[in-house]
Each structure stands twice: as C-alpha cells, then as structure tokens.
Image (tube, rainbow, N blue to C red; front, side, top):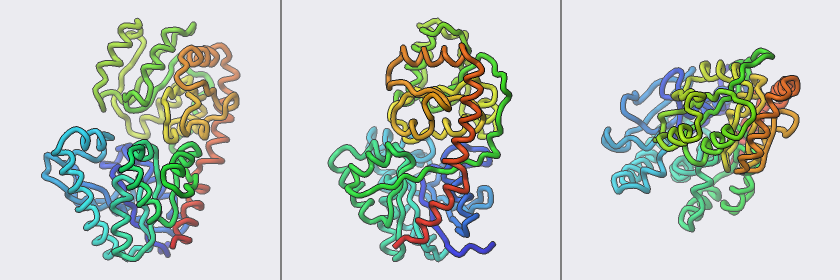
Length: 386
C-alpha cells in the first residue's frame, strides 16, 4: 500500500541491529501506523559501528554524525544527561548533536517530502524538530516518554520544554501520570497516547510457573532494584530472581547489597536481552516485579501482562495505567518494602489467583495497548496536525 502521509521520526534511541531492544517502541509505532497509511522515516544520531543508512524491519533509517567517533556516545545508552552534565566534552558533543540533527532533519525532510515531524522526547528530538519544522514549514508532534519530563525541572530546562511544546501541533505522553506532569511543566495540554505493543511477540506462558521472579531494566536507583532485594529478604517465600539488564550501568552496589542480605545464591544476573529472549523469560516467571519510582509508563508491565504473567509494582508514575490492582496484579505504596514483600508472598500463596490475574492481564493489555488502537490514535494526530 502506498502511504498517503509521510512522517519523519526524530529519536536518540532506536534499534541498532535486528534484535536490539533499545528504543524498540519507536520502531513499533512506526510499523503500527503503516496499517493506517502512514510511512515513517527515522532519523537518529550515529554511534561507533553504525552505518549512515540502513533499514530496520523495512523502515528507512538515517544516522547522522555529530562528533568525532570516540565522542559519539550520547545516544542509545540511556546516559545522555549524565554525560552532558559530567564534562565539557559531553556538552560539546551535545551541541554538535543539536546542530547536526537540525541539518540532517532538514535535509531528510526535503528529500522525503515529509508532511509531519514526530519528535520522540523533547530533549534532544523536540529541540531539533522545533527548528527543522519551521525551516521545512511542516507541523511537529512531540511525545514525552518519561526521562525528558524529569529533566524539565530547572527554570532553564522547563523554559526549553515550553518552547518545544508551543512549537508542537500536539504534545503526547505515554501515561496519565506523565501527561499530568508534562502539562504542568509545558504550560499546555498534553494528551495521553501510549506506545503500541505487538501481542504476537508475547504469547501466553503455561499456567504452572516455577518459583521465579523477574526484574527487567537498567540498574539505576530510579528503577528500584534495591527495594526489591530488601523485600525479598523479608518474604516468607524463597523464590529465585532473574535480573535482566545487568551490566548497562555500574551494578556493584546492588550486587553488594544482594550479598549483604544473603540473597546472592538466589539471583541470576543477566545482560540486556533481545525481545524474543525476553518474551521467554516472561513466560517462565511467576511474576514480574517493577519497584520503580516515577516510571514513565512501564512497557515491561504490558509485555508481561500479554504473557499472562502477573505484575507487582509500586503505584507510582505511569504504572497504574499498566496494572489494575487486584485484577491483573498488585500495586503497593511507592517505596514500601514491607508491602512489596507481602505482595510477592501473595502470588506464591494463591497460585490460582495468580493465574487469574495473568489471564485478565492479557485481556487488559490487548484492549489498551494493542497495535491497532494505538496506530489509529497517532494516525489521527498526524492527519490533524497544523
């Protein structure tokens, strides 16, 4: 089908190879809206070893240079803001990213004759898109995914966010909590519009599950693995825990905590996994635990629900959008380790209840986050953009 509408997606996180999960949701949205007659072209920063042009699942991808090769480390790692704050070299690379990003967006926009720019994250994509959209004379939509809203707290950053928001035809956020925070900081209404999940990638697991918990994410303080470790030490149940995401950041502190709590022999530390491999882990877990504070949405909660795996999480950030307390899993007060421990024990105390939560979780996830529903929403935003 020939697409009637052409969109240029700006992102600093996008899969670098076939099974890379980094920024996969950006690609999933682009693939989903194809069903609505929308063709998406992707523009992302370069990184060592990446080609200037390639394709990902049929999507055309251009990656632009912005610094000497050794300094092109801002994208894809989730450490952009830390690198920029941490050194003058990082700040110089960031300035290069903005300048080169604008030039590349204008060139790609003209070459593709795009109708709309879609900036994922207001920083850096929204800043780049704000300038490029004016030069190209096309509207822009900006989507916040969480980390960028948390950055918009200082007066200077909030002002920049407001500039991007005012330059956007629409601003979206991937959860209700994030939309409320973004509305306050952007000074305009922010719409709730999640990213899609393709259900076929997460088939249901077996009814009987081993006594194993799963944690997925960067091992940053915000993701809260330390809360889960302390909860495990308090549980009556003695499940094993697989931690997926080890090695992305310095994890020596949480490993030391696990040893201090006597949990070292019950934890498997696993590096970041491809989506197919992660889907297997969901199906093998009795529950996914998300002890994060102020999580933007919680895509892992949706993926687990599709796998009929109950989710235990803090009632924080966007997670209440992903977990129906007492129906698809359990939500407990943020930071309350004792309540987290009791919720874990409840999963193992009543396996029939846990299985029911899993079945209801899949139904819930399909209805709210399925590819067709999300694609229709974003295609409508693209077509109405001015």
